[in-house]
Length: 326
Image (cartoon, rainbow, N blue to C red; front, side, top):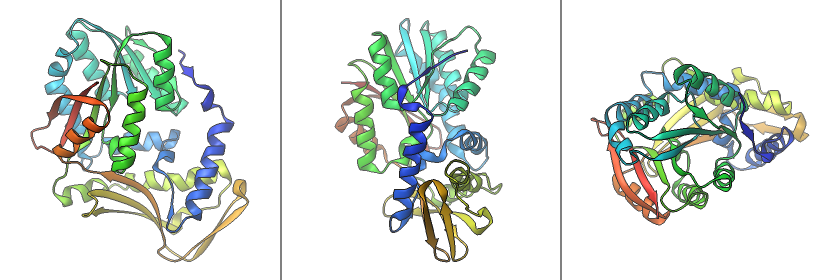
């Protein structure tokens, strides 16, 4: 069991980058911590729990799309040889459904998950060995774009890149365009991208999804503070913080915050800095932007892709858009 670890994912480099991000974010007004840092091993484990919650609908709806429309997606690639490149694969449960449809359509599949967490990669290899023991797996531990560029330098295989869930929603619209252009830059003409988009819908549905009754989303956000404690020598008292999720009707985004319950000081040893918080002062942790169909069409156009098809659940809450590199 082995995977390729990119040079930029050495033990020291991400810690230094994490430290700089925390220093910058907590020095801003208002304070913020990037959602990029959610996904250490513990964060990845908690997110797997979130995806299994009743309130968190995107996972079930995207699985419905793959169960019921996967054969239509696979038809675009019938009889070909294909790298299925999974960006931030999680447990791969939805991806394996799609891979089975591809194999049923006569596609020779090599599975290439890319993830920044080596622990998550090890877990995924174990799952793949149980679910599809004959599947060729060639994982990459590292940044998505760096992973795609490294992969493209190895051979000229055709690629279907997956960016599933509602991960694109973590970027505001300018950053989403920048991210997708970077993905485009790591691909070749004729490669494809399948991206999940959470569509705009009843606000009560959104609020329930991001404030679940079991408190897993709260633990997921609070793990950011735990990670600072573990990796940077912080002394955050998690009992003095609470998670708060709300919807911004002007931007069309769910927004997540960690709220200080009291006036307090937090020292972070690795930064040699003490940060002061007022009672009820927020730290912003995440945006999750929701889309209209017109937004998706425009995004493909400006990022260098041709829209092929959209696959949507019966409620019209979630869609997976298949694009080809122009």
